[in-house]
Length: 566
Image (cartoon, rainbow, N blue to C red):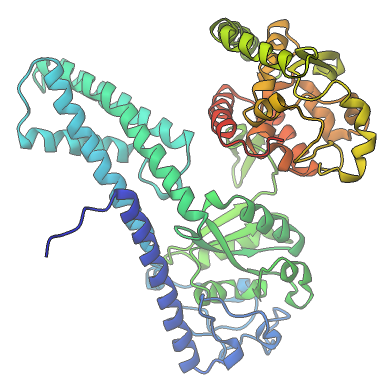
């Protein structure tokens, strides 16, 4: 029988992730059977997903005393040295990390890493062949191609691109690829200088790196997109147990669920008082035990990581003891410092004699970077207006002929430092649209502050198309030339909105509003007011050129999809 066509690499990766997920569930079922065989009560055994159900309150420890009747010696499978002891975590005896049962990495991680290695090797070999042909040299021997691939993989490994925490990391992962290329080029130049290799290899190696580096970044970008798509389906994730005060854990769990691309699947929590943890239960996070039984809970839940909230009582000493207890198990110990909406590149770890200090770098609202942003904004706006002038003229004629009204719509908005200005748009509604807002207030579908309707009777025929693809906002490039707006920034606000601002939203007035921004590429009118506030403040606090470029790229995708545009 003839074989069918080979499956694309993406399908094989998805299939591998599904197989790994099924294997995880099978191992969880085996663990449940083992727990039952060791005498666990029926309602205390692990469920099919590997997590002990919350409906068994008598198996949840209420206190950390040695007399706690819950999760005692007969209730917990003693699979790791020291877990069978009663009492608080700090009272448990220390153990040899080498004797601990090591948690195996998820199978999807091995599959993903193998795909990345294979693709990187193919890129290296192909780039070398293309470089030699470009220079007119004969094709390299198989051994030379293999050596080139190995050297490229070694450079990527040394730069840390194959560390699990880098996968799917975006800009940081790409920077590591560029670092590997620069390092390999420098090493080749040094080898030629020291006459360790013949000088003729320098030119093809440099050309191969020039070709291979962007291709490698592209491969990582495609793999990242595939990983995020699978994570949205619940695959390629790591199981994490949250530890700390309930209030902090509720916030962490909520944020992790929103950010599915991070790859953390919350399977349960451990809190100081499990009997009073109603908030976690309301959001569907099972409480698996008290703080003194975290190692046993991690073992039962087959967790890959534990995340400790820094706001917990005695968190410093507790975290130290927990890290000792988990040495050798391959379970990751993570600390959630409680910093909200602070970008990673604004954090700097500064050591002291006995403990690290995290410094938050203040955002930059002035200086050369801000001047550069202004210059780039105006140059790009001028260039786009010149190149798109035929399109703009055509749209203007269409709007005028549609209902005979004016082409442009001017509306007073509030800009940087509270200065008002007139924002320009192609008119997409009838001329009496503002006067009809009060009549339509009863059918408002907005977020409570912004008036929006999915099917607005005030929108003209031309306006429906203009709004669908955000073409009505093109005249705002004139506002950018004037200096009223930027290409990327918070949404330009109405005066009545600013009157309702609290201290957090006042921060959005520190920068110029943008033609596009996080609000526009994250759902626009589909977002709640709280989400709109959060996105605007996040942009202001974490502005950088790299993020602006990323938002511009996402804007094109959002415009084509038309998500939230009405």
